Amino acid sequence: MNLPPTVTPRAFERLNEIGAAGQGQALRVAVEGGGCSGFQYEIKLDAPDADDLILEGNGEKVVVDQVSLPFLANAVIDFTEELIGARFVIENPNASSSCGCGTSFSM
Image 1 (cartoon, rainbow, N blue to C red):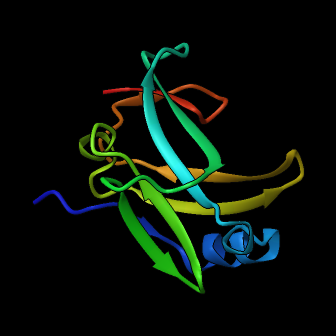
Image 2: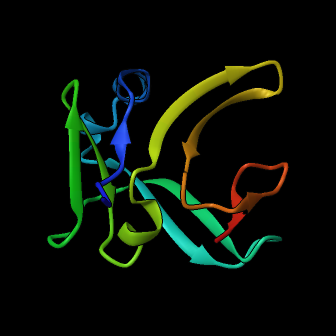
């Protein structure tokens, strides 16, 4: 069964620290063709569109456009801090492989 993506509390907390909602922005997670594995994630702050799926928590929003939604079914959107840096990450069970950068994948 395909469920919409979920967002971890840690990701919503980071958006709250950034102050995205106060700027009228949400975290947009999209899938585009390209990257070294065939598809790549685009993650940016953006204003929600009328037809976006809106995931809300901690006063913040994460939005996914309708075209990207099937690629992100059952995925988890998280925020991680590592020695190499801090970033939003996507754990996508639909990806058959991904590259080392974490932003490119194949299905």
